[in-house]
Length: 548
Image 1 (cartoon, rainbow, N blue to C red):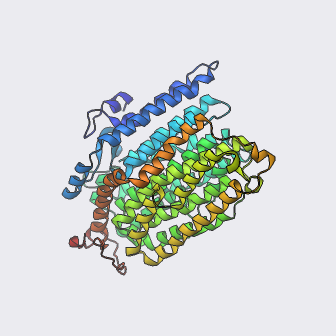
Image 2: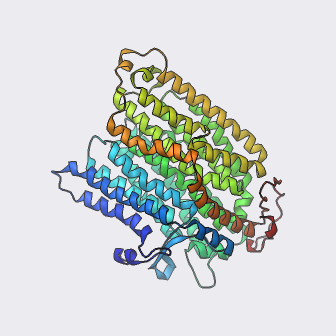
Image 3: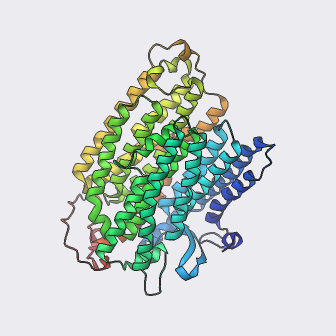
């Protein structure tokens, strides 16, 4: 399979292979940057930013061309709602193909990835070795997009692994004092999960193969449902552990604060905005879709883990002395909300989870940018060494306040939309878990406002009074985040229009193959008691089609 054959493949809905271009444009950019002469390292970031920006423009074109009405029609016909599909045979003997496609669940994650990377490439100075830094950032963009659009299990695994190497090298090469320890810890944790994922992928493809033979095609395997119940549960557990490490959830989270704290600013932004979403996206795309009965069986444990993450992340964040580490622990809490939403199995909760993935990437990515800008000025992130920053840098303080309030979930800003949908959707089926998780909103306000009070208010020292305000370039870097936070808080309809048909489609498939009773709109129900399952294919489970 050559690159020319990939670029020649046409996708449904467009004659231009848009998804393939989104993957290969950054790859080509990385090669161009790597081939630049050593005497011109100054060209690396401008050229890399250009290629990354082309990917961003293609992603915006993808969002513009995405047909929400067609997605709704596919839902009514019971068809998988993927658009811009492109398929090229890769390893025919093993049933492996280069198959990519996008639906409402993956669409905005692709856009987020493709827009974030050029912003941080242009706005954050790596300070040394710009050539390899830029090349690794571009490969990180390509691998992340590839993972979000892959519809072949083997292709997804390849892309899932590709992102590990650039992130490891970015942390180890451009991070802070403890960068090597943090990078190694990140790599060991994620590789351990990936080993389980590979075994589960092979088992799913071989044991769940349809009559036509072995295949790694996601849709074929999901629609066929040939795995026996116990086998499917074991495979689901392996998939779930790999994704929960990436999310991460308590107690698999300990690599994240170290990685965030020691990573360079751009690495922290991409890690928070994009890489963590590979875990929650994987739980949705592969956990619920491939193993519906097993997902229903494991849901009580997973929502418990998610809620523990909400509370633990918030309490631990309040105890941090390092401002960047505080923001890192806030991610643990936010991702716990998303896990709760996914395994509540309602349209509002699942849709809210997808929207919260995007909104968390925007607000937390901006907070990491702001913390990095403050470190460039003061060379410290210790909260007790900072005070009165607001009097010296009022514009910086204003932008930080906006992003902080977005992270808290204040109505009118983007963070409120996802959290609200998760809470009202989860309350239908996971009532007590939701009540406990709701306290996380209060705790988030506590630790963020307390940190803000200590850093930005109070009597400033001489060093605090000399803190420079935001420069023009920094304002330009932050402007897309500010616009997105306000626009998506006031008018989230573009996200909702794309996400709703895809989440409804996924839940219809889940209910059909698991026996779970989907609650009707505005009709709270109790989760039915688990019934006994035999070691037989779970495609025969009963389903009340009139409930949705």
